[in-house]
Length: 372
Ligand code: NAD
View 1 (tube, rainbow, N blue to C red):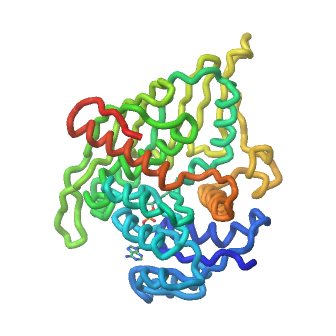
View 2: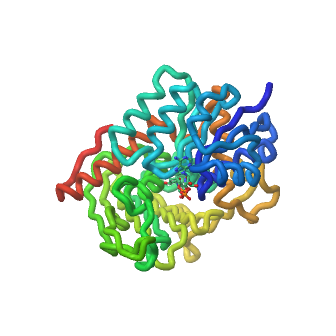
View 3: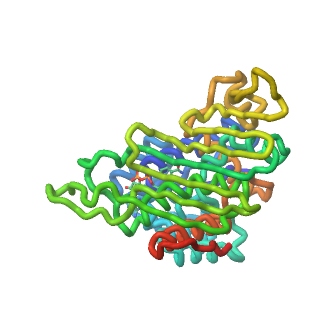
């Protein structure tokens, strides 16, 4: 059987990441047919042609709609800015394609609902790009929690910080437009939420505060533009199982480069993880009491599957793009009808509902229940 036919829309940060994953998945895993990279779509034909050449696609187009008509394309990767996700993902599903869409689903909750609804009755896989849940360290942490290694979890803190918007002189671009969403909430908080949903279940209630460090940013034309969303969010949450949780997100946090830090506290120990050191975690178990009691640092190793598919040696480490390759392998499993570790549009919508509850909480200055 021929490998899946792939269409890709967008070739920025995430477009390249998806393309690398489609190019590598068969070599890394060995047990799937090599995908056929059919057509790459970009904003204009020239850019599309250049990127298709670089990323290994046979054909290219300046009109993403061309992907819909092509029967050789089975899956469409949507890696465009947030405002385009709903239109592109829904059109792809209606054209009978599987969809791999970058997070978040859409700035408007109604559009996220339409995306989820568009999957009904299609028999197609619609998965979100929540790569951090694919880290073998996160999978091991989940096993440890489920096995009761740190007892009953009662408190979780998660922080996501980067500094790509920390410089006030940085030019205004789409991430500061209201049309791309609330800012730190749907750009950032969705990632920690994907981890919380994977490790503990859904969010029951939230109370949120948001911050806008810079009211305006310089624009390309030499003037200034008003910043339309918030770069900082601080949220108290009540999770399923009555777990007390704190989520903080800041995309203007100087010095932080890719921090997604989890602190998980249980009745018999604690677990610490930070994506900036994504190949390790720390665990503290009360059973090992004594004068040497402390955190043990666990390094990623072949025993932490699917690390073994990348490197036979422990402690050498995976990278960010490898998480996308694992996510791609999971997507292929789902398309083959096998069990897959993914956030689909149904679960994605629960994450969106949590984010919108946070925004409402901030607007109304009160706790808000999250409907699931
Ligand atoms: P980007 O600006 O680097 O790339 C976006 C690309 O889409 C550009 O190449 C642009 O030319 C193209 N594009 C825009 N409109 C288009 C259209 N109509 N047709 C075809 N191409 C079009 O943005 P990015 O940082 O790659 O972000 C893209 C998406 O990925 C966003 O939704 C973002 O939230 C998400 N993202 C996810 C992660 C992750 O870890 N999963 C990380 C970064 C970004």
